[in-house]
Length: 156
Image 1 (tube, helix red, strand yellow):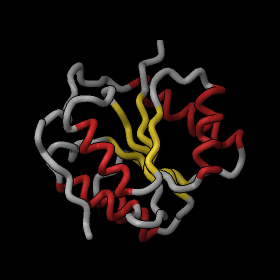
Image 2 (cartoon, helix red, strand yellow):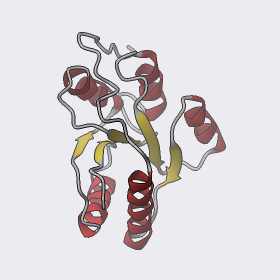
Image 3 (cartoon, rainbow, N blue to C red):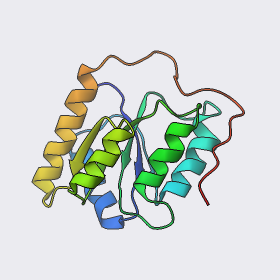
Image 4 (cartoon, one colour):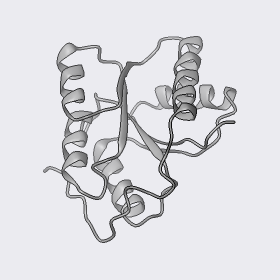
């Protein structure tokens, strides 16, 4: 039985977002997918939805590192500093295989770090691995991110 997997995709690349969506559709994905094109937009979505209990739970953030306005590292710093959303599950999905990026991401307690695949078959395998992992995990019955009236303030 497939658990509902709600994904918040934070990625500025339209092609990569469509690539992921195709693989999710092929896998009979059960859940929701929301997208923010940069870290600032993602923080706004989290602030407006999660902190007020309006996002489907449980959810996972798939995060690109290389983005304009606010990159993935800056986003992780802001995310982990905010009590309302600090426990968010984040998996990095990025083109960067840099050891420095990998180390910085794990320092911010990401669940995993995946270098973006180059073919649809490889992306299908990533989606299968994510859904298998999701189905294996036990999830809280109640949102763990619902602390009302907490604002997320992005770096300037």
